[in-house]
Image 1 (cartoon, rainbow, N blue to C red):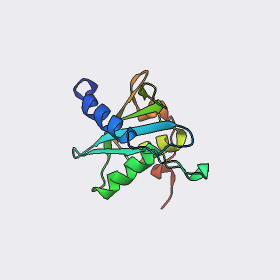
Image 2 (tube, rainbow, N blue to C red):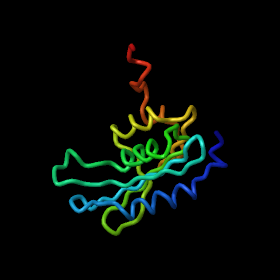
Image 3 (cartoon, helix red, strand yellow):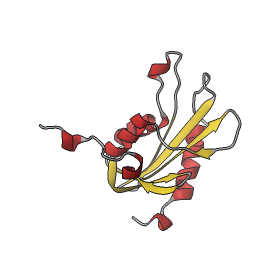
Image 4 (cartoon, one colour):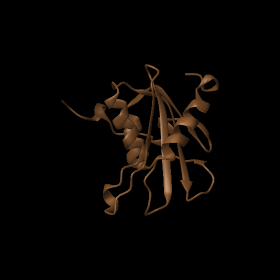
Length: 136
């Protein structure tokens, strides 16, 4: 995939729109993610906090739910914004759990836009565990 022709502006707009819908009354840190699927669908998600912190839903988890709710497939491009209170939108990298979700549902050449540049999933999750490690 060519990162120069990637739909980054479209993904940035979708992630910002998703972030605006986040439910983050405890941390005041809103997150919005967006991806383009292998068949051209734009998917997004926002974080949804819970008073029982361990059951908070990350934006990427919500987005992967949308991936399957709208037909499945894989992700080809991805980015994620975070915003503390009313501060600036910042490109952020996914947490470990969400990196695993991206790895599991990636296209062959998933490109991820981060604050340090465009990277592949192998840069964020080297030596990842996945379906290839399971014997069925």
